[in-house]
Amino acid sequence: MGAPRKRFGQHFLHDSSVIARTLDAIDPQPGERLVEIGPGRGALTRALLERIDRLQAIEIDRDLAAELRTRFDPQRLEVLEADVLDMNFTTLRGAAAPLRVVGNLPYNISTPLLFHLLEHRAAIRDMHFMLQKEVVERMAARPGSKAYGRLTVMLAPWVQVESLFHVGAGSFRPPPKVESAVVRLIPSQGARFDIGEPRRFEQVVRAAFAQRRKTLRNALNGLVDEAGLRAAGIDPGDRAERLAPEQFGHLALQAARSIPLPVP
Ligand code: SAM
Image (cartoon, rainbow, N blue to C red; front, side, top):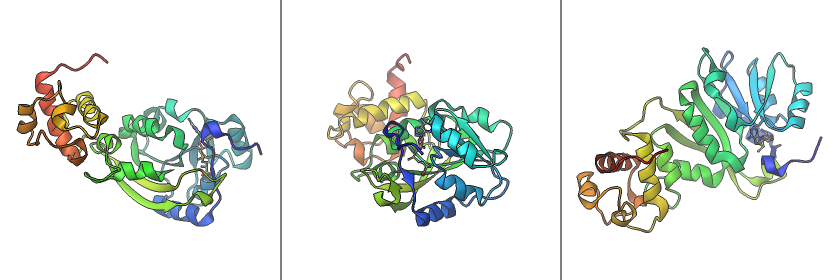
């Protein structure tokens, strides 16, 4: 077995109670389509295959992929050697039931990976991930809290986020420098509240949080004027961190009235 590769964010779970709790949270049922991201040395893979017959797993590390192919029955585990950021989950689902996606994710790519998965949300029933604790806190944060920000608001229209439990660094080998948490994400097909054009929503959210101590009047200068802020029911002297995700939807609709979208 080779040494863990830092560039692939390799921290392997060895704590059987954490593995059992994660499996209970996923609650896989026979016949469901499960896809694991980053199976590594197979700690979760093995536990999943105790409950279901077949599993697909996406692993970027060629050596680990080869090792998994020898350790597991290929009739039951299909190892897809690929970068998950290039994986087309819509194609992977095909005509079958929506996928249940799980994994102890490589933390260095967690944010781009979440947005990549959201692009394929129509193909996904739910997701259960082990992530850096701070990232889960940001995903599930309430307005006004320190963790509330761009990630919270950008996910809010598309997924329901449920933080499930924390996991200490000692549950992994080698232990990461950060604490971890398991999160459940349930994607919705349409936006959960009106955001207008998604690119406009993103533009407004990015500008609002670019300097979070600025008032919205200043942060959104050039995108939504004072009259637009008031029309959206928002105090121009307020700050981004105090607005609910739905209010960013109102702002995006106001911005759409005056400014053309940037060329992609
Ligand atoms: N699931 C294993 C466990 O819990 O012990 C390993 C988790 S480890 C944190 C992350 C895994 O994701 C590693 O096996 C790593 O090689 C793999 N990985 C990293 N980047 C990846 C990528 N872009 N696409 C697919 N797999 C990746």
